[in-house]
Every structure is written in C-alpha cells, then in structure tokens.
Amino acid sequence: MSALTANADALMAVLKPELERLCRNAPPFGEITLKASIHDGDVGRVSLGIEEARKIAPRSGREGGRL
Image 1 (tube, helix red, strand yellow):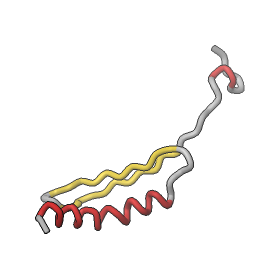
Image 2 (cartoon, rainbow, N blue to C red):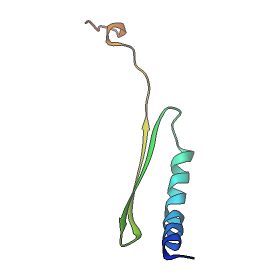
Image 3 (cartoon, one colour):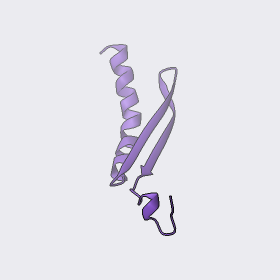
C-alpha cells in the first residue's frame, strides 16, 4: 500500500463518522457541510454545518409588505 493510500484511508477513518452524523441529521431542504483542517497529513479540526432552507412569500405577498 502506498503512503498516499494509507494517508487517505486514515483521513477517511476520521471523517466518515462525522459525515454519517451529518447525513443522519440532514434537513429535508438545505445544506450539510463538512470542513476538515489538515496539519501534517492528519485531521486537526473538523467543522460541521447543517443549514435548513425554506421558501418565503414574495415581498408583495407578505402581511404588511408593500413594493
């Protein structure tokens, strides 16, 4: 096994549980993000994000809204 493959496997071992957690909590509409800070070939920090999106009425259709 090459060093690059071993390094990729090690990174995946750290990131896979985090990605699975995000996928279990994914909103019906929106985004999930996973950002990993790598230092010397190892994960130093993982940032996770879940953002929910929804449509809102156009400004003219909202209560009290005027154009």
